[in-house]
Image (cartoon, rainbow, N blue to C red):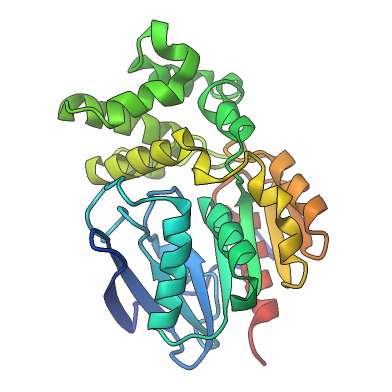
Length: 318
């Protein structure tokens, strides 16, 4: 589209590493861009999604030291698809461990979808460590948000794809689809587990953007990706994100008041609908609120991409 900013060119990391964060878990991380630039940690989605290339393309590599990492159980972190010792608060502390390991005092935090959830949880826990917060596709893991996408709501807009999502669950268990999926994703039958993982993952992969993307749909159906993505997502959702209350992140949005920020939301986001971003805007009015009128959920859609790149450019050092 004319006039919209594109991503920065694809870049390779100048440094990769692994960090032992517990007796069980080791996380994989990359650094890219300018080693002496302004530090930013970019949080991937899911949970369970792992690093994707565009996460390193939203920031000017001449001015930013760009850090990405695979969260517990995801991507190249080990053990793969592991649910033990895998909670939101474990990940929040992993971010702190990585910050200390890399010798960073404060950094910008950016992320979309689950990356916005984790970014909010981290910033509300450690506001003194966050220079700015750039979030898109806002998700706070309230029960109503889970119910909309995985039980009833989005099903009305994607009835064709919904049939494939529910097909792996017997009718008598469909009153609680997340619980039914969790039983299969954590069961001992590997074939049942993988079938459930692929159906769960492709439901999300097929609904992420305003226009369909067959390549992404196929990627979400890959065995390794689907297993981590579905198992870890369902684990977090069954446990309410491990938050002490249903609206915890919104209730504590006042802790963000001193942090410069941008909230970016696609108007037609089916995965994480507009009402959650609006609620965050009301609770954190100091942040700029940008509504992309012709976008869904994913960060690669033209309008969302444009808004993200412009936001990070605004915060880059002179």
